[in-house]
Length: 81
Length: 440
Image (tube, rainbow over all chains, first blue to last red; front, side, top):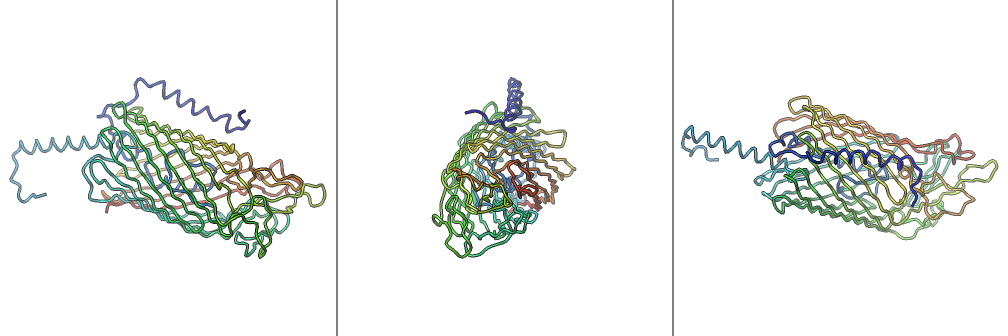
C-alpha cells in the first residue's frame, strides 16, 4: 500500500530510527551494577512517576484526540464528548 | 518491639545490629530499584495503604467542564503480592461540537432525545449544550512475583455512566534479564463497551428529523470490543538513564461512530445559496479499527533534577497518524519539594473519511465524519506542577495546565458562504489539580 504523502508519515521514522540506532550502538556497555542503582531507585526515576497525573492526562487526551494508549493499559473507556 | 524487656546491648552487639540493619536497608533499596515495572519493594507485608488522591477541575472555553476526584490506593500484601485499587468519579457538563459547520444563517438542530431543539447563531460553531453525565470507574490490579526475575499483573476495570458502560481486563507478564538491567514485558487487554445513547443509535447518513417527529434510529444500543497487545522493553542505560520502548497494537470491532455527531450537507450549486447548509445527516465510521503505536520514553537524572521525555508515533487503518512529544523537567527545590514544568506537542493527521461537510450533489460516501477529533490539528499543552512534602508520609501537590487545539478553519474545500467562516472549532481548555498523598 503506498504511503500517503502526508507530513506526519514522512517524518515518522526519523526520530524513532535515530533513537533506536543510538541506543543499540552502545549495547556493549549498557546497564549498571547493583550497587550503582542509587539514582534509579528514586521515585522520580520511575517510568510513571505520577500515576494519578498520568491517568487524568490519558483520560483528557483520549476524549479530545484520535490517539490513545502506547504507554500501558488505561483505566477503562468512556463515552467521551 | 519489646524494648522494655531487652537487655542492655554490648558494643559488639550494637555494631552487629547496625551492620545487619545497613545490609537490610541496602538490600531493600536494590530490590526496590530492580527493573522498572518491578514490584515497589519486595519487602515484608505492609500494614498500611499508600494513598494518592487528587481533585481535578477541567474547563473548556464555552464548552465542557468537568470535576474529577480520583483515589488510588496501593498496598504490599506480602513479599510477593501487592494490589492497587483506583476509584474515579467524573462529573461532566457543558457543550460539545455536533459536527455541523458554522453557517451565515441561524441553524436549528434537534436534540439527541428528539424531544427538543437548539439554535445556533450565524457564524458560531454549532454546539450541542445538553451534555451532562457522571461516570464512576472502579479498577484493581494485583501484581504477583512469580520467581526472582518475573512477575505478572492482573487487572480489571468497570466504569459506568448514564449512556455508556465499559468493562475491561488486562494481564501483563514481565521478566528481568541481564542483572535486572533489561525487562521484557508482554501485555494483553480486552475491553467491552456498551453504548446506550439518549434517543438511540442513529441510522447512518439519515437526515436529522425535526424535533417532535419520528427520529431515524436503528436501535436503542450497540456495543464494541477492543483487544490490545503491548510489547515492552525497559533498559537501564547507565546510572542516570533509563529507557522504555513499547510497541502496541489495538483492534476495535463494533460500533465506533459517535451517535451525537452529524455532518452538514452544503449546497454546491452555483447561485445565491452556494455554501449554505441544506441538510444535516448522521455520521458513519467503519466498524473496525486497527491501531498501532511505537512509544519511547527516557528518564535522565541530572545532578538533582530529572528529565522525563517521551515520544509516541501512532497510526491506524483509518489513516490517522500522530506524533506526541512530551517533556517534563522536575526541578528539585530542596527538602523534597519540586517544580515541574510540562510541555506536550501533539500533531495529528485527519482520518481518511474526515470531512468538513458533505455536498448536496454527491452521493453519500461509505464513511464520513465531521468530528473535529478526527480532523487534522495541532494540540499544545503547557503546564506547571508544584509538589511539597508535609512530613515523612504526606505530600501535597498543585498542578495547572492549559491545552489548545488548532486546526485549519479555512480549508480549500470551503465554498460560497462558508468562506470567511471559521470551519474548524478550535479548542482552549485549562485544568487545575490538587493532589494529596498519605499513608493510612
